[in-house]
Image 1 (cartoon, rainbow, N blue to C red):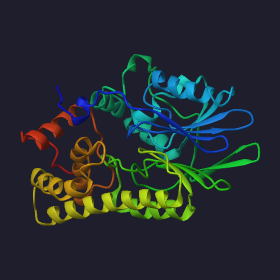
Image 2 (image 1 turned 30 degrees about the vertical axis):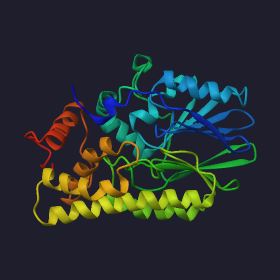
Image 3 (image 1 turned 180 degrees about the horizontal axis):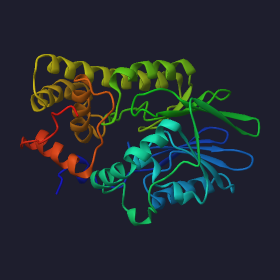
Image 4 (image 1 turned 120 degrees about the vertical axis):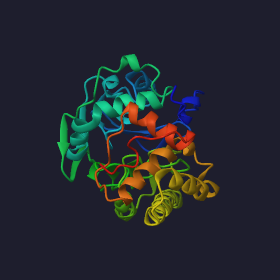
Length: 326
């Protein structure tokens, strides 16, 4: 038994399907991974697919209340299993991701799938409906544009932050942004595969778009410029505070367990009420410790490494490899 904090999160969440503008919708569920929906004249684009095909069916049911059109394209903002493994539930769509995201699926997609299914039993109810890894049918380097009639949707590999392949979907005319996990709102950023030193610069690029409405990776739909700004700056504050504190511990020569305990005490007063805080922090501090020690490319999380890390940081047991920068 892993004992992950998320293992105790078994209650169903209230789902919202909010209209951001004509044909633009946010599928959110009290801090669970969000999806975005763009209705075009010939079909629908879904931004982030949900964790399983079974869960995708609920997104499809919401879409059916606003349009009879089929889902023609699914955009993956990054490679994490909770975002991508539901893609087959939308029929046979075109699946779009950045080249870096595809590379990460090649490198670590299976390990990530096994790891996340172990961490999130509620999100992966219906996991037997997953046919396997989700593979992009189309990839791009920096940006691409899709046209839905006269509606422009820019798909932008915006920079390294939550992962190396982070992608946002920006509608410049409507000033609506589907941000993926580059931005969270009232939800703890998961940083187990993050690039802390780059995240703030990536948020600068996100802020420069000038979104007036936003679907963050987690948290409610944001309907004003002030809400969008608050989400960006809250994400910046969390990731900067955490990495700064961990780097201070590394500079003092502290070990991972001492840094974790110190960082939890430092972060909890300000951020402890954000959803999934208890779950994310062991992964976050472990990655920050690695990056502060010079490891640019995040180590791969496996189901076995998850359990080993959790026991070491939450229960104080000996850890074989968490403090090895390799």
